[in-house]
Image (cartoon, rainbow, N blue to C red; front, top):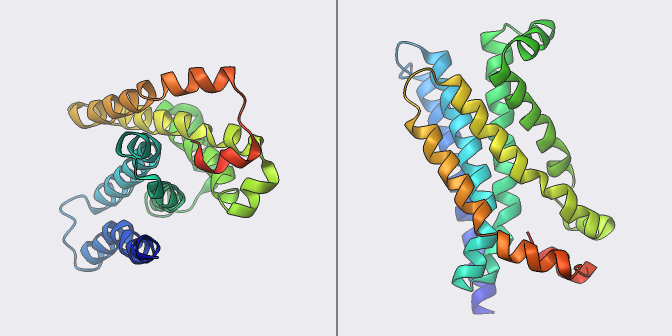
Length: 209
């Protein structure tokens, strides 16, 4: 009961922390404190948090295995949904403010600019993950749910590539995100190799990455 109560208290706190960057962004936008290029700041900061939360989502399972704190898995869905939220905010800012709401222009940019191509692809791939993130969909899809949600690995990589190709000079920050992604993939290799030899049961899927 004590640990259940701690989880019940931690979830609203985690929700508030995930929402805090958005609140900060809205505050800066409404108070004119975004600097000389406010649109770029809106896009950069919303995109940053989408990628950070996507990587945090991927980090939950290794953290659970290394620490033994199995309740960490209960925060994964929230982190993933917030990653989708910030990615949607990022795309909306670009479409509505930068492009003036012209979808046809967005399609042209997707074709011409590789960094927009991979960024838009990452957002599209997030949609089915967000729609199937509920417990009901986990049970309904069974082992196919796990296969579908492995797209998160690719989505995070596409987000990193989007950042790399967007930045023209200083690549230190996207390089850091790439290094984190590589580490998160490497720590999964032994487990994935064992899982390939022993197919999971439906009951085990809810605890697996």
